Amino acid sequence: VQLQASGGGSVQAGGSLTLSCAAFGRTFSSYFMGWFRQAPGKEREFVVSISWSGGTALYADSVKGRFAISRDNAQNTVYLQMNSLKPEDTAVYYCAANRNSFGRYASCTLDDYVYWGQGTQVTVSS
Image (tube, rainbow, N blue to C red; front, side):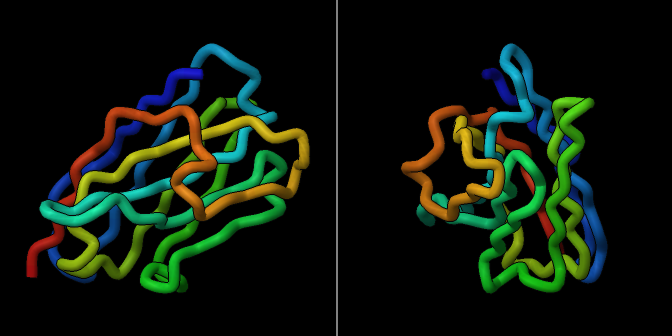
């Protein structure tokens, strides 16, 4: 499966952005999806994951209550709604995917993901 992330941009602290990740090439509904981010000089870190059924969502503590993940299997797209953005949210955001037959499986582990998008830059100014 090929992933294409979009929706990044520059906002002021407290603002909102919605990222999208479109999947091509496979049956999207059998893939769990995740978002990771990487700030300059730092390792890539987990942000959020959603099972292919949409029934399970995992969030990093740093984004709980501010970010929300959702998916539209008919549109082969997963969305990340980011609210109350902070300067520390500044990073390149990557969507990722892997296949799992269990509809409620989601993962916060980078190594669980096989397919990666190209990344989209999010910059939050204070």
